[in-house]
Length: 319
Image (tube, rainbow, N blue to C red; front, side, top):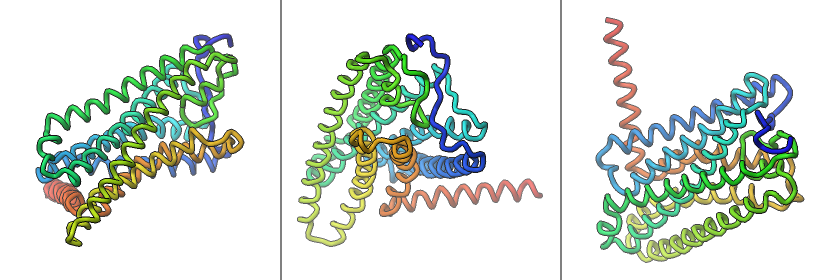
């Protein structure tokens, strides 16, 4: 294989060659996928339908849920289908599309988490200016910037990665197409340009991380100064879920991409990839609804309305 254009397909990493374990993997991923669809779908519906949740914080949460649905739908269904049909193949164009969507959605999600940290900072540290700084137009612009940053990142990384000659076979050591695994298939010294782009991206990621850390240092300093215990509890209930989501996303992704080569192995890479690409979209709705009374009440309303409507339809059909 002289270059990428001569490849018709790639072979993804299989979770197992044993049929029973393949079906177990399919069942586990199906359960996680359905949980992510249900959780994020409920949050999107609750935020869209409950006028009390039409605030900047929940607007950004709605966008986060959309990104989570997109990211888990990019990687999990193809892996499930491969296990179900006992195959490893993904087409060249399918791999390129998957890599683009992964880079796009993950970059957009991290940018949005940075914007959400700024929203919490303004709400707690500069409450008198919140209405001015976080107006509806400003929020739409910030969300659009996060999505636009992700799209640009995905476009650059995909174009750069697939312009590199690939001459090390077509076996990808991961259950979805990701940049480091594609670079392993490149010819010697031909991947330097993409590595440079990755370094620039990591610098931007580190800058956003520093911004989030500094924001939360100031947030917690301000919260501890609140005299009433109820006020502190309310402030923590809006901040801790976001901090938990950021910690989960950053820690797993950082370990996946920055772990020492001596620790690298197909099995470990597989587990870490599941932790940063599959687990967060399924867990995020739980983290956000656990300590948030407003969101919890809205979700209960949506669930009650859904069951009531279903019951009414069933009764009318029975009659």
